Every structure is written in structure tokens, then in C-alpha cells.
Image (tube, rainbow, N blue to C red; front, side, top):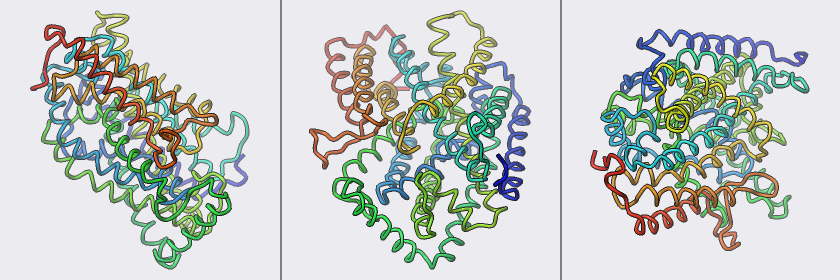
Length: 507
């Protein structure tokens, strides 16, 4: 089991992992508050200023998905994997325009989740439940994506086992994550995010300086990667479209994946949680201006997929490309440091995601449907317990949901989350839609998006409209178009009763 273990790398990995786990427990004492109150446990008391929010939101959005999943797609098929770059650029104007307004509304009315806001806006319990259910459902594959990233680096350390023992290290990491999240709430990932981001930037800077220098520069890297990708396309007989530039059939998918992913990202419970934990709209706007620095880092990280080809990395699983690249190009101790940064980059968002989903369950499913009179202390206790169950659900996703790329897990969640975009965003700026109309649109969007994603082999994020290769579109946007159409028609036929909810679109 440990005969082939890279001991220097493992020692560094374990040291940093233990360090951040201890930080997770210590975080309960940071910015002291009553952690038996959901407002404190799940939102940090809304006391995180611009600097803390920058690390928290950045740590929430730039994850193991960034370091493992994006380069793996670039390694496998080339330029197409770079759709994540415009996607992470598009999200910041949305953050700047929409979310200070949402923060102000939720702060004024004491809302803790997107579901709280939707019920206050439309007075429709079924729509509130739909938004909550969608958030929890979509969070499962997203947490699973983080755990996959962690599992890849553990495997790269040389931990070899079969059966249940193969998942033992991930199980230990899972238990630590569950315990400090339960104890410290949102304070834990907020504190750990400082360490995680510093480590990631050290690794990225080292990679973009040292690896190209060893491989003969970026020109040599692009030449080598282009030759490998072209050969892959030829060898597949055209079944695989790969290259340094986009093929015509990839343009529409590239554009729609970027737009759809950007619209979906801030709808997730964990993204809303990170934003609502800010101290005010000014902190959110400051982050919208400065967070694009992460997008620059993402460009450099995506290039590691090309570097792996230039370094001669051969692997049947593209998700092993970056770990193998680090092992080959860095000293063992620094490879361990890089692997620790990836694993910690999985812990931070996984913690926030489980907290966001747990808040949503307690506030918007259990409280209105099961126990409307639940007191704040029991509500917080329920959320803590649910944060554990959400992580278990993510493990089940890894075991039972087949995907070609880890990235597909994120895109699958996006197909669902984009269906709540009309209820959350449109409600802030327009009274045109009614709760009943939005609920009808959600039903159609969720059904259509899930149907399109269900493929004969694996969940797939794209669908060829009218069977045309040139019209391969992101399933989430196709479903959203149907969602909006139905929502508009039903809202015209059944308009909003202004007495149903607290109409706060001008908040």
C-alpha cells in the first residue's frame, strides 16, 4: 500500500494538511460570535470586510476544479478547455451590478439564503422550495469535484491500495473537513482561504517560470502540444476534435459554456453564502474589481495542460496530467507542497459548499415544510448536521455518477443552477414575473436540462440543436430559454398578487 509512496512529498503534504486542519478548528475563536446562531455559524455574522471577502470568495470560486479539471480538458482536447477563462471574466460585472443590491435586500429583511429572498419577494413557498432543492442538488457534484481533485493528488503521492483501502486517505480528509466545518462554520474556510491562496500563487508562479525554462520556453511548449493534439485528432479518425485553436464545431459550445457557466455560478448556495457574509455592498464591489486577478492565474494554470504534453506526460486519465507534471518537473518536497495546495484548494470550497447547502436546507425546506416554529439554536444545530450529510452525498456522486471529465460535474450542476437565475436576478430589477410563472418555468427548465444532459454513456453538458454539429450548445442555456419563455407566458396569464409577498424589487 505504501511501498511506492513518495515519502518527501508525502511528509510535506501531510504537514500542511494538518496545519490547515488545525486552523479550521482554531477559527471558531476568530471574530467571536455565538456559533449556535445560524447567522454566525453560516454567515460569519456578515462581518467579513473587503480583504477577507476577497480571499473567501476567491477561495470559493477558484478550487481544485481550477488546478485539476481545467488543465485536464486542455491536456485532452486543447483550446476548447480555455472556455473557463471568459467564463471567469464575465462573472465579475454580474457580481458588481447584481449582488450589492441582493446583499442590501437580504440584510434589511434578515434573509440568510437565496430561498429566503425568493419567498420574501414572491410569497410562494413552492418556488422557495424549488430554489432550495436546486441549490442542494447542484452542490453535490460540485463538492464531488473538489474531492476528486484531492483524490488525484493523493494517488500521485504513490498511495496504492485496492478496495475500500483505496479511499482511506480521502476518508480521513473528509472526516477532518466535516469536523472543523461542524465546529467553526464559515469562519473555518475564511481563515484557511488565506493559506490556500498564498500556496496556490506560489505554485503557479513557480510553474510558469521553472517549467517553461526547463522545456525550452513557451514556443517549444506550444509546438509540442500542438503536434500531440493534432496527432490525437488524426488517430481518432475525426471523432476527437483537438488542437491549439478552436475548430468551427467548437465555437458555439465554447461561447455558450462560458455564458451559461457565468450565469449559473453565483446562483449556487455557497456563492450566495460567500457574498452575503460580506460586511456590505462596498466590500462586494471592491471584490468585483479586484477578483479578476484570479482569472490571470487561471490562464496560467490552464496552460499546464500544454506543459504536460511538452514534458512528455502520457496518461489515459487527463485528470492525472498536472500531478504527473509536478512530479516530473519539481523536486519531491515542492511537489508535495503543490499537492497540498491543491488539496487545501479542495477543502475551502467544499466547506463553504456544505455550509451553503446546509443553511438552505434548514431555512427553506425543513423550517417551512416540517417545523415552522423551530428556534434559532435548533435551526443552527440542524444546519450543522446537514453539512455532514451533504458531504456524504458528494461521496456518493463520486462512486455512482459516471463522467468523462471532472469538469462535467461542475457543468452538470450549472445546468440546474441556471434555472433559478430568473427567480433571483429578475426579481431584483423587475416585477414582470410572478411566483407561479417562475415556478412553472423552473419545472420546464429543470426537466429539459436534465433530459438533455442524460447521455447513453455519461452525463454530458452539450446538445446538438437540430442534430447539427455547428449548433452544439450548453444544455443549461437551452433549458433556460425554455424556462424564461414559460415563465413569461404564465406570468402574463397569472400575474403576481402584490399582497402575496414583500415586493422588494426596488430595495
